[in-house]
Image (cartoon, rainbow, N blue to C red; front, side, top):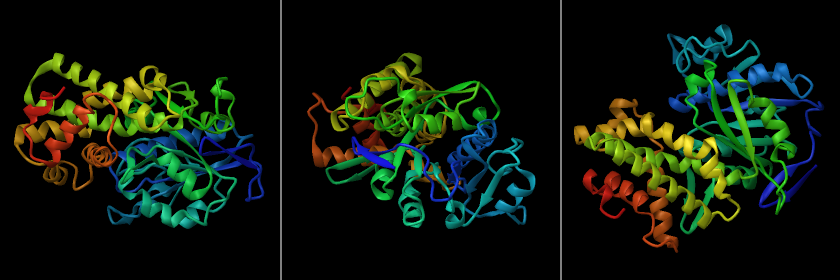
Length: 380
C-alpha cells in the first residue's frame, strides 16, 4: 500500500507482487559509463553483503543490469557471472557470489522491488522508457543520478521523475564517495534522502524508505546518514559538478589554494540558494551539514573527472568536448551539461537572488560561449 505526500509516493510495507515478503534488489546501470559504471559495481558489492546480513528483509540475490559489451573476447556479463568481478570497471574487487549480471533490462526487473538507479542523466530517459510497465507499484527506488532535468521553466531532480513516471516512491543517495574507495572498504559517508509527510520533524531513520535503504547500504565503512530531504540530496549530487568544473579552471590557471577555497565557498552558497529558491521542500541543513553537501564539494573540487578535464581545458586550450574524447574515451562530463541546463532554466524562469548565480553562469560561459577562464571571477 502507498500514499502520496510532498509529491512523492511513500510505501508503507513490502506487499510484493512477486509473492515474497522479501525485497529483491536490482542495480540499474553498470555498463560502459566509466565512473558511474564503477559506482554501480561498488554499490552492488555493498548491497551484496548487506542482503545476506539482513536476510530477514532481502532476497539473497542482487541483480545488476549491465549494458553488454565485449571484454577480451567475451560478453562482459558472462565474465562478471563467472568471476564475480567487473574487471573492466572495478578490477580486483569481488562483487559477491550473489551478484548476477543481466544484459536484458526486462529480465533484470522481474520480481524486483528495490530499484537502485546508477547512470548518467543523459541516458536516464531512454532507460526509463524500457522500465515503464515492468515494475510493481509496490516497488521502491533510490536514485544516485547526478543531474537535473530542465524543460523551459520546469526543473526536476531525477528522484521526482522516477516517482512521477513510475508511480513509486523514490529516495536519493549522494555523498563524498569515490567508488573504488567504497568498494575497497575505506571509510566514507553518504547521505540518504527519503520521502516524508508534510511538516515531518521526527527521526528520519524511522521513515518507511529509510528502513529499506539504510540496511541495504549502511556498513561500518560506508556510513549512511538519513535526512527527510529527497530533492536536496539529489540536487547536491548534480550541482556540485558545476563547482568542480570551476575548481578545475582555478587549478589550470594556477591561482592557488586561496582562490580554490573561495570558489568552493561561493559554489556551496549558490547550490544552497538555488535549491531553496526553486525546490521549496529542500532544507538548508542538508547542504551545510551532510556528506552530500559540503563534503562532496570538497571531494569533487580536489579530484574527479570534472575538475581534471576543466584543468586540462585551461592548460591545453581545448574545448571540453574534445577532451572528453581524448581523456574519457568519449564519455560525457556531468558538470558542463548541468551548467547548460541551469543556464537554460534561469534564462526562462529568472531569479530573485540579488546578482543571480554568477559562478554557475561563468562555468556555462567558459564551456559554451568561449569566455576566457580568467573571467570566472568577473561577476563574483
